[in-house]
Length: 506
Image (cartoon, rainbow, N blue to C red; front, side):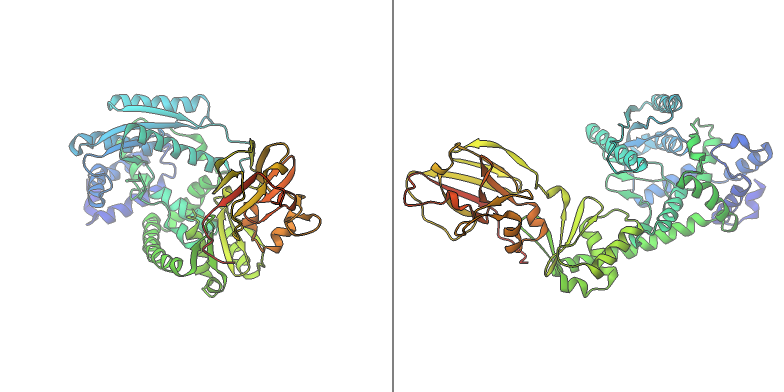
């Protein structure tokens, strides 16, 4: 091994390995390379014991504790096949229980079927249980790009397999080049600082033990061990963003900076340390700036929030929404919202969150909580209690009057005025009118809500109790005059719209 004599350290050998990537730009398809280059490549790579380095790494980091139950995600590509070989040959010594899962994306026809067949064959050779899942069709109006849809469903499938099998971890074959590609893509899309952490070695139950190893090292190990793997030709299509960065941008970058993966990995580690500090400081801000309303909305004091530096106020919203990697346009829009928004203006955020500028506060809530078009099946007038969204509606019937209450969440009505003997609960709609108690004539529900200074979140969650198309009660706010108790009333109904007191005043 004369080449090793030239170098004194393993890091220097690593640099030589990177230099060889300039000679061999397409490691995933080595059949295209000349025999001379492949021999040089193989000779250099054999100086590195990937298996030993891998074992030292998982021992040092504790990523794969002894005795763990592991679900290994295997696509059939070189990276996941090498990981399968490493775990399969080390499992006995480490008492790992392994199972294999493959996700069929259904986009390459028979070629994708061959991927699944190879993974199944390899799993059988290692004596491992094999499971396969398939990507469902993407909904026409989902608004989600195919890659994000496929990724979300793949991890959903893997987590289901893990739970069903009672395993501890999901292991994927992401490596150092994947990390470099991801961080560079996020930079180009205007990611926030948090996005520059890139891919983490462990996220929840998902572990990526190859993240410190380079693609060239993994491919060389596969060649040395004669491991069979599948090559996905779509990975060569440079019209796709990630492939362009992989084959064009990073190949050029590698010609000047052979060890760029290490530099990018160091950046990610530094950002991660910074983020740990930022998260602690943001939690302190949450304690002083935020309260939670009874309807679940997060309430932030506007004056205090706007006094914070732009970075802090934007990151606080990202923190509270548990945001993923927001792209640049979201950060820019949020910054503009803070600078220019007036009372009543809303902004949509990723994850179906909505940010509302109210009078003295910013309100943050998820759009899935809004139920303006909810309609509950009509029900007979009788004693009852039922859940309506985050509220509880109750009706109690008496043959003699109950005490009146000044609490707007409790009202008395004349049961005889409900001629159909049926009631219905639904979200209020534009155009709804009623005769508010004590006023002559009708008034738009929308105007009543404005007069009460309800914010848009509260308006979106406002219900009405109706009978025969007429509003009986604007729930928790006011009764219709036509259903009030009079001296002629002989059958009384007590309506209750129960909720906790609002923590944050508007």
